[in-house]
Image (tube, rainbow, N blue to C red; front, side, top):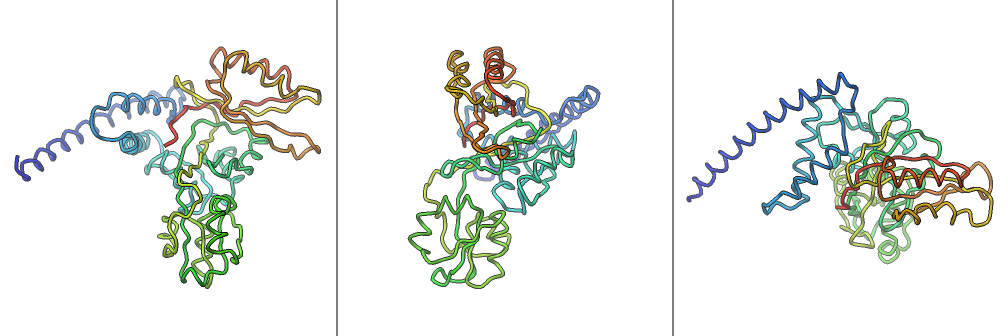
Length: 355
């Protein structure tokens, strides 16, 4: 076939795709009318993840999984908007990694609402200003985001999905590297670029701010200042990249939670996050974890945080394989509640791939 013939064939395929998307949109609108009567949520993370899993499993083309997921995330976003305009809070301003994670998960056909702090993201969901929020929970290099863990102690928001975002950090600034005297960033990126900063900017003052986007905003107006932030932040604030991809580990990934008013129904492959406080007695932690070992339930993460209510009192956070509605995990959680002073299920959500 000639180039013109190949292009004509591709045009024909595109025409068929448009027709099928229109057919899908009509069905989605019907689903929306059914949900309006039943009161079901327009955003169904378990349904969306199962759809993506099925498409990946049946994909026989050379299109990679990441590309297929990205295409369908946008299709799902546009289709969801036919039912309802979803509002999603995130730690702003624009171009933060939280902003990128929210856009990656929900697509472009949503209303993204920047908030000044992680606490305000929780408040936006709790008070109904937004349907959902996106908050960072842990980084593959620096570990847990304590501000998020601490907020879960008091919040009634529930986890309904998780998002993994590869993080590439750049040094952004207007002047040459040799003249940088101050570096702005969020606390997490400073930890993720610790070795690079010690080697190339050992005398620079490191100033912590609320977000990487705020860091770029400040660096753009100050001589001798730079920011650790994303390339997107550099474009937003017209800051050149002085040094690209300077994170200490090449596989630098941040995990985010999507929070809402309720957990997701079972998807068939799920995780559950739980918070508990121990009784003041010997072997209390071993007793708390014993029901999961007995049931053969994997713990994929465990963290502790001070309660901030009483000295030396701690809350424990664990991620478990399975859904809280499943028989085995539900029984283990009942046993946990019997041996602990306090327990709370933070949410069950689809176990999505870390890519």
